[in-house]
Image (cartoon, rainbow, N blue to C red; front, side):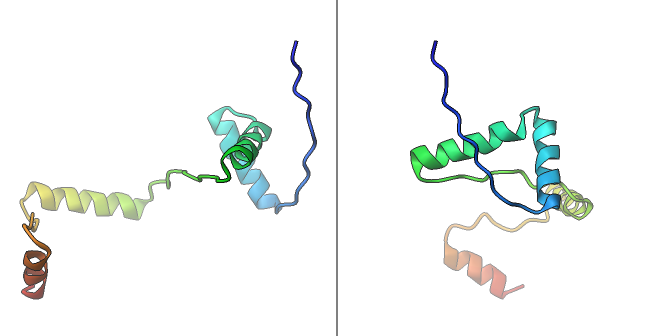
Amino acid sequence: MDYMKTATVNFKTDDATKTKAQAVAKQLGIPLSNLLNAYLYELANTGSVHFTVSEPMTEKMEALIEEAEKEIAAGEVSGPFETLEDMFRYLDNL
């Protein structure tokens, strides 16, 4: 049976970041150590790390989306434009 040799990695972070990270990991159902190990694995094997976390929806964002959807439904949109010049011409006339 293959056993993965393990190493302990210690690093410092502030308490608030650790607490938030633990909460997110718990929501995902993944131990924080597994997430950290995945980041290290990607860094070691690809030389890069990609951070993609969806930004949580705020009340302001919801209001802006609702307003945009109303404008679209009412036909209050500009474009599409055939060229950039057409778009700039339109914007200059606003």
